Length: 297
Image (cartoon, rainbow, N blue to C red; front, side, top):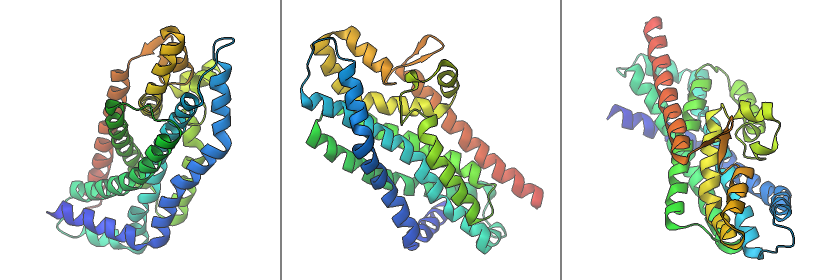
């Protein structure tokens, strides 16, 4: 019951700040516009360039493939960046002194930590859910190739990536004590994370040293799952037209299938990596909050 009250309190504080909520909501829309307006042509040209010599493909497949890449990249980035914005409540409590009041209340450190974590995850999931709806509508217009299984897997991927982004932001925000600090972190994460997880450009197109480094980061595997489940149907359609080898080549070239030092990474391994990372980060966050509170007491 105490945990529920904390979650509800944190969510109310977040939604009460209209500027903060508007910023979180508008960020995916701006990113979506930038993807469609500036990066769409790049990925269309990349696909057309990789077609077999003399081959032609329908516009619907090209748009479905490109739309799948754009939406998978958008959700993969927003699941992390929005979590940092939503965690502003934790930092505001420190700045305004509410955190001290909560610490002297009969609430355990674990309950307090989980209250911040779950409320942030809930808010982030709501914003990403709106972005998903927009993405599904966009794909339905330009080219829908998602199977029923892919549709539900994209939802599962979104939940896992939101849990990952929330855990990561919770640990970072645990050490921040000012709104200026979290604003600076938000700017850095928003600018860098898309490159680090392979959302803005395929990791396979980068130099070996950089690609091997990025493959050591867990966010890369969550993004790869998003790519596969949003783009897999369009790639399978290309495989019907040009053969399975061509489909495998496209999957490797656009990070639907990752290669870790020459070894192909299976889909279940990607799920395992990101899920174990989420569990480890949540455990570290709760432990960090609990131990620090005991030391102060």
